[in-house]
Image (cartoon, rainbow, N blue to C red; front, side, top):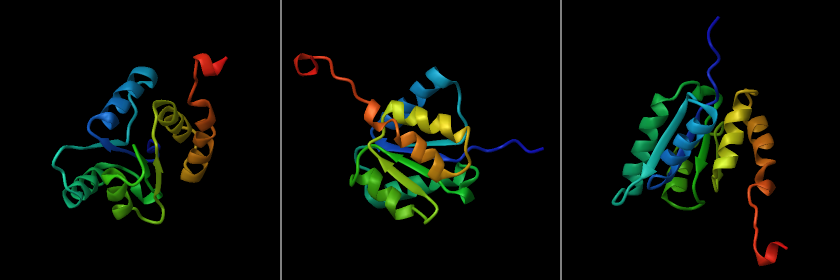
Amino acid sequence: MAEKVPVPVLLISHDGLAASLKRASVMIMGDQENIGVISLEEGDGLSNFITKVQQVISELEGTEKGIIFLVDIPFGTPWNASVAVKREIDHIVAGISLPFFLEVLNYRNQYDEIEKILADSLAIKDQCFRYLGSLGK
């Protein structure tokens, strides 16, 4: 029987944030397959960056099921490149954090449906931040 390929995830960010998130996830959860990482570097224009995104997508498996794009901020170049290549079956989430990324990895090991993976992963959004200080008393 063929091994199940997890839903592809594409981490896209400015500078090295995406690569750092992936490295941190390996430290916490172990190596995870079918994750693409792309960083926007100084001097990358949108059209050049779109080409980079398309190249990394071509290296992922199971893209016919859709791709989860995890982008650092909405409306920046990584977001715009994701929107440019997004198909109807793909999903883009902006505002990635390590807790959210770990949830996506956890749920994609349980589910094949992107909508279910993201619905359960997004449930953590209200728990991602903790504040301890004078306002947090």
